[in-house]
Amino acid sequence: MKPGDRPTPSPIALVLASIVAVQFGGALASTLIPAIGATGSVALRLGFAAVVLCALGRPSIRGRSRADWMVVTGFAVILATMNLCLYGSLAHLPLGVAVTCEFIGPLTLAAVLSRQARDRVAVLFAVIGVLLVSGALTTSWSRLPLQGILLALAAGGCWAAYIVASRATGARFASLDGLAIALAMGAVVVLPLGIWRAGGALLTGNALVKGLGIAILSTVLPYSLELLALRRLSARIFGILLSLEPAAGAIAGLLVLGQRLNRLEVVGMALVVCASVIVLGASVEKPPNSRQR
Image (cartoon, rainbow, N blue to C red; front, side):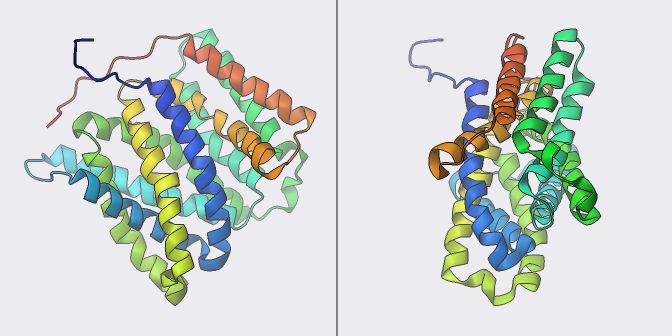
């Protein structure tokens, strides 16, 4: 590092910070969804997030190639679909089951990209760990609505696509320009749906304040941190590190709500930590050659 250069945060630290932010955002979202529904909650989340990022970053839209617009448009579609499916699944499924279904996406991506035996062991540990921590093994799946399971699986598929699209967007757009543009495009599509489904409830003071909080904690902070991390971190390592999310949620429940952890949850947490330690033994990828404008 040259004198005067700013120290660059570790991509691992960025991912961990995003995981922490998501836990608080998820807790806040759980109080908003019953009031205005999944679509209304997503509308506020994406709408406020787009306003905040565009105001802070002032993304440049001039001089972009057709390929740039195709990438960022795809990213916008993925963001909107992922959030709608995610919140929609939570309206039908227990949190643990929804989390398990959703993690199939990023963990499958990690498995596909794994080339070494060590990586495959890490993926296996992560899968078992998520199952144990989420409590999905103690749930009667036969009684669960198919609609909720399909929405959760769709959210998982979008999550895997999000990892790839975020990495591609970060390679083509400087700073957080691509993310801001994608969120704005997604918000334009989702906001009318949210207003149609939630009506006047969307514009109450309580809903707006919570929506802003969710936008910052669940979208602005984590998506920004993850995009920056994916410029220097492989999608394989990133996908496995995400398995720390349910463990972080369990710890948050213990510290904030006093929820006790059973033995299976403790074992599951140990497994996802082991999975992360295994992949962190691999070298962090250098950022891809990109056109930063």
